[in-house]
Image 1 (cartoon, rainbow, N blue to C red):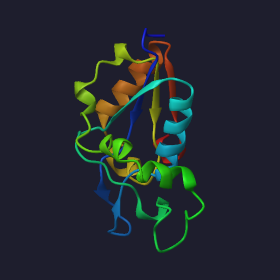
Image 2: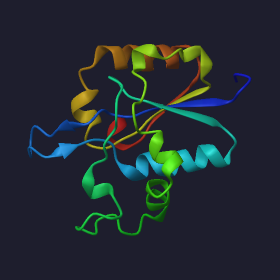
Image 3: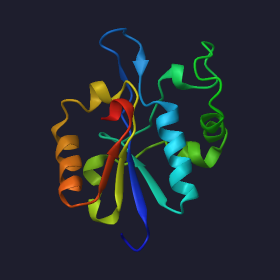
Image 4: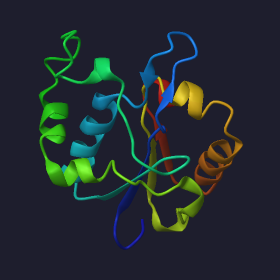
Length: 145
């Protein structure tokens, strides 16, 4: 482990679904639940995205979405209602600007966005592979896989 016990969370940039034409991004539960677990375990957490910038969640994953699909997700609602945590999703660093040596683990967040923004992104593939080949904990959830 590094001296600071750091985890890097890689989150998709916002995009448009080629299937539905709707805006898509990360899945709230994939980010907020992991963030809470890592934070409770004492890790420092940095959130980055392939291209950097402000992140957007898939709307159905929001506990406040009118569909009610994720209405039971109180962990995501808590994250969304915390201004300090929401700042973590604004102006994220680009993956190319990240020093992987600073991190003990990598966690790739799911959602529909990764299926568009990460699937053919060689920079993302190389980063994840190098992290794994360095013997560091390398993980993904849902469509982040």
